[in-house]
Length: 251
Ligand SMILES: [Zn+2]
Ligand SMILES: [Zn+2]
Image (cartoon, rainbow, N blue to C red; front, top):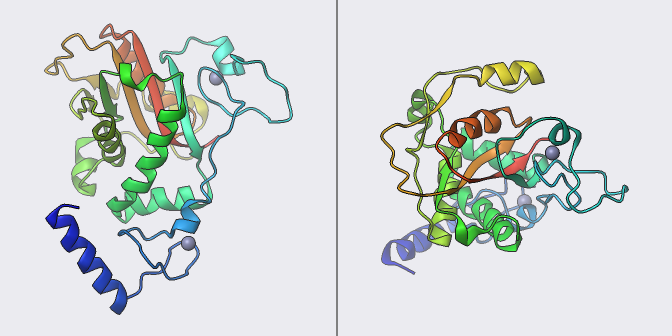
């Protein structure tokens, strides 16, 4: 434990004696919060996405049907995907939805630790995304004004946490979101696709220096329109392996 961690630990212990923190999901007091406002029992309720799912985009399949390994969903069968694989760790529901809201809108950045750990565990156990071969981890960017307003890019914090853990190069400067668009929430599939068209670009000043394998990271996968738009741009750089990992998946 470093000195500053030690003082944080003491301060937190002291404060929790005077003002016990209660879990924002179940309401029970948290004994040792580590600065999180969600208790350990509730974090364990986050529902991970089990197999079977689409080999390429990770869309969950019905567990009742016996799918062959490598089976593709209808979308992946019928259109070209610009990514190598997309995987998502857990369903965007319940406790995880609450955690993402607390992180994004209440700036509870300490939640990056337990959420980042879920992603690290996933990557460590997944043999398709060869983590040791990845040359760069980068997040889906926010529009600059939005990022300044919030003070951080939540996907960037998660990506940095993971990159540090695996000692992989990390950057927030490879991609630029140069236009503000509507939120994807509530838009139809076609509207979502149009909404992200000509919104993302590669930063011409960023040097890839021969990096050929990238892990793109985002907080939530819904229809994949944003991911597709970015991967289309990334492919133009000549990157040969483009993996995508999101913390949560909407469908
Ligand atoms: Zn709880
Ligand atoms: Zn698919």
